[in-house]
Length: 388
Ligand SMILES: *Cc1c(COP(=O)(O)O)cnc(C)c1O
Image (cartoon, rainbow, N blue to C red; front, side, top):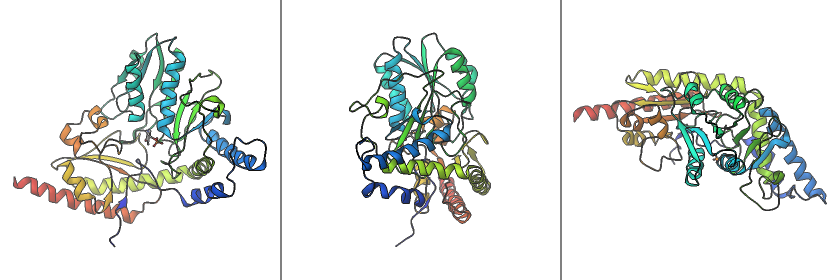
């Protein structure tokens, strides 16, 4: 059996940490109760575990436990935030502001709202991927009800200036939503300091299980109203019905606890690995970093390589390293990523781009092996290209 490729696709998903898995296991068959069962011990046990995870999550972002609404992931949290605000505030206004480089889990609900008659402004970004705050200020209208800007980009890893954006929104009485799926556990988040009103979270990007996430919903200064999108039983203060998935919630809490325990050390380690990879790849020449050089997630390296065909490059890398070109969610379609297009990259360069997502379990030896193989692949593709 040949070895599996080295996994460098941490922005698509991450393996569940063994410690997370161990914390989850008792909640499948031993403490299996329904957290909503208030009449017996089985329910109380599950509810106690959910309560603890809720507190951990709240503490991680500077919120209170009552402000955490569990969902199936960040996609559902984004849908609840965007559609929930639109439905609750449409009489106040019908204009929303977002950004061209958002994840499809924000862009698609925005397009859906447009089909209902809402108006959405999709702001451009600078060529380093960061939002131009002047453009944001110009985009506000008297009927703007919501601004949605992601914390960290899933393709190029850039970090948006949340605190400033939050200030602008607060001054104007506009609700501020951020998709923090990539940011949770990687960079410090604080809904008070950043003036965030709604924040989407997910467990599987930080070594937790898939299928569990949350939406932070501000309850005071100001209290944010949301129209629920899933009805049936009134769980989660009526905002998201459905039996709470206790094992997943326990895993989510454990994953957050682990990530917060050594965020600084892990950030340094990932940055070092990324520099190591970038320094080796730079020797190729004619390669370009996509996104701001330092305002980015520590494990993200997104590059465009001139003089090679994107498809051939991916095929050449596949046996040795699992990476993605553009976002995993759109890589089924053969078109350059909308994020790289928004940075002004030519279609050829956008197409010949690789997203390396370095994670908790990657080692120096793996990085060196990936660098060596990538360099060899690019060199041979460039030689072939020269012959024609
Ligand atoms: C992964 C991701 C999502 C989707 O999260 P799920 O929990 O898989 O639904 C949304 N936004 C961003 C920025 C992501 O990286």
